[in-house]
Image (cartoon, rainbow over all chains, first blue to last red; front, side, top):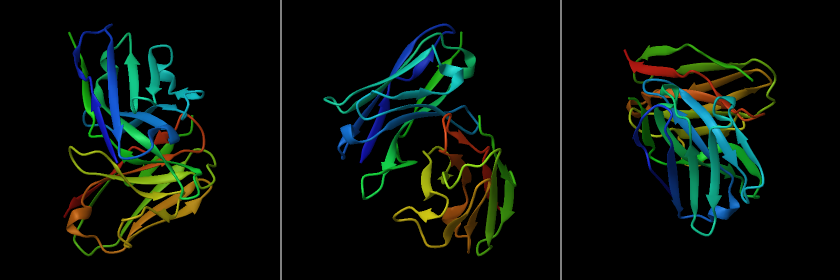
Length: 123
Length: 107
């Protein structure tokens, strides 16, 4: 299993950025996926979840209306479109797989994580 | 939102010590509680899921217990590779929330 994020970088306040996460080594279309972020020197913050077929999506309140999580199962890819960025969005952004049991039941924990991509919002 | 409070925030310990970290939820979360270990510059790694189930490949010195609002992560004999920051996380309801972390440092 491998998750590789890309798309991070320096962006001005009010700007936009699109993060990507390339998945391999597992059947991507069978797993819920998530974005989680970590501000420098701080703890972890869950950002969003997306169901296998994209039919259910959940966000933390602080990003609702600004961020959009999406996926392309044909490309084994997860995305996070981030608009109206502010300094408070500066963080390492991780994509993570939501685990499933051997019986195929969702476990609701993150069993694989990418290495993270740093987003810095600054003028 | 469900608030997750870990204690202590940091621990200074020696190899071989027993470690107990607690996590309290602001409301009942049944057993939807997970524990992660994070080392500097690395992504977190799941240790315990569903409060007490040990992730495959995780050493048996790690265990978890609790239900409802009070949970515990225990390391029976601290090893050099266990010095890290530990986070609890509830997945009972969105927004899924993490505790603030407990840093286990070398004494």
